[in-house]
Length: 135
Image 1 (cartoon, rainbow, N blue to C red):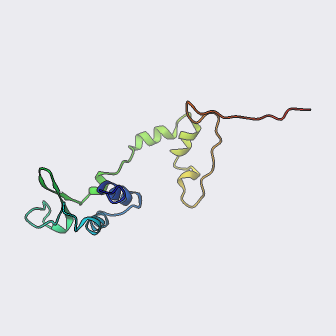
Image 2 (tube, rainbow, N blue to C red):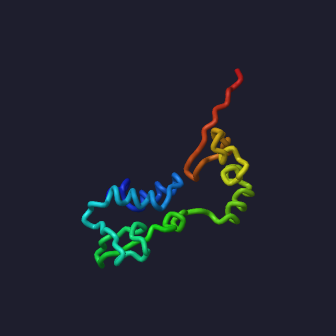
Image 3 (tube, rainbow, N blue to C red):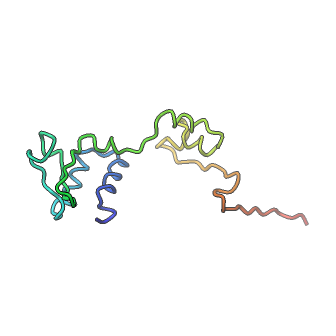
């Protein structure tokens, strides 16, 4: 499985572009439909009454079928709203800015603004400041 065309990569791609379960399934069929481990769903092997909502994979233990209805929603990595609110109230300017819904960073029609750094970005990083000497 190529990382770009893997099931997880394609799922992440669809989630990022607000794709649909149907688009995800069509992409799987387009890329893997002729693969030796792809199994075409039928009414017999798909849990959904409509086999067009399923795809199958031949695993070491046998054929496993997946129903794509709600698949992308179940696999979104979204933060709970309480966590977002708490992070928006952070004492760290950067974190507060990232999670503030009113921030320009969260408005698609504006370009993001830079947040000035107040120190090292990571424990091993350092910032060098030069001062002009009078003289």
